[in-house]
Image (tube, rainbow, N blue to C red; front, top):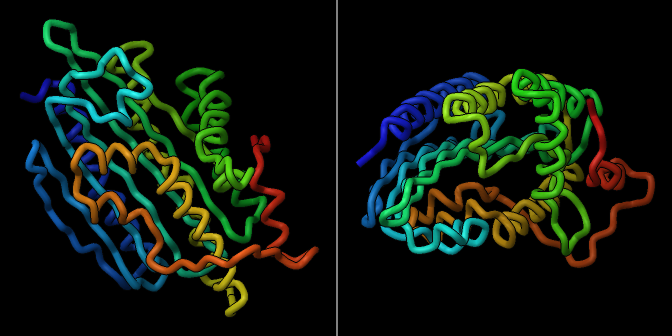
Length: 301
């Protein structure tokens, strides 16, 4: 049975998915989202929406899910071992947008809510999420704007919130085997229950609503820039890093697979086209080599 808190979060997330999909369609101007509604045999389900072969977005996926079960999967209990063996309910919206133009960054955002309870104990709840940016040809103006919005989202909740969650994002989206960040960061938080439900829920809403303000101006600035085969090939090569992170490190991917979620929905975060090249090295001084300067934490605000 859903708690009142779950019902309120679910209503917000469904509306958020609708709003993001509508806005992305307007920004693309050509393609439309196709929805797959799905049910999970163990409990719950969701609606996966994917836009493909658009004028701006090669693929865009925006997922809503609400799943529940009698036992938390290992990916959730790894950092909350005290809840091992308990039941759970989890709901969230997760998106990944893969633009066609290499000068437009890939982006990811997620907002989610968990409740977990062991028999005879009070339920535990927490929020998580954030958003991050993965450019192939970075522009300082874009990265500063991205982080300025992230800072503005956090500011009403305390002066320490942005630097804490910005640092967490830099550390989470880090490919240890490559010794580089996945992109230029943003915000990441988890296990948020400080200050009560209302405050935490308000922060989730601010993050979810702030994402479009952070991303769409970048799309508008870069989507018409001309590019050629060289830039496209570099984009496909760098997309390989996205695949590596999501399949090796990402907790959301692991949770979805371990909890019996819909595989196609979980893996829609992967790019539709990608290439891997052995021991690739960009030409010294090239625009491609410049990206390495951005794949380590830096202060942008």
